Amino acid sequence: MVDLLTQEEADVLPDGTEIIATWSGGNGPHRYTVHIVGRMRYAGDPKNDNPLTFVGKERYHTHVSLASPGSEPDTR
Image 1: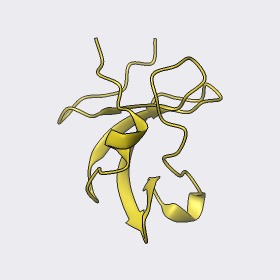
Image 2: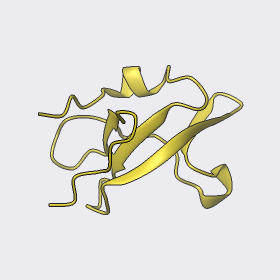
Image 3: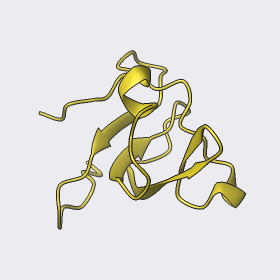
């Protein structure tokens, strides 16, 4: 079972953290590296506008978990 992060936990992820995200619209899971610009955290390149907002465990939240080293996202 995957431990999904809360918004509060996502808001303190350090720059360079490897995560797995499934976006609130259902796209994913995808592996990303967290990047910080100002006070905002992004999944991947901030120019692609993937802010880590609306993170949570509910059905329509963006689901974020920490990636294990060498792991691939479960795409089943």
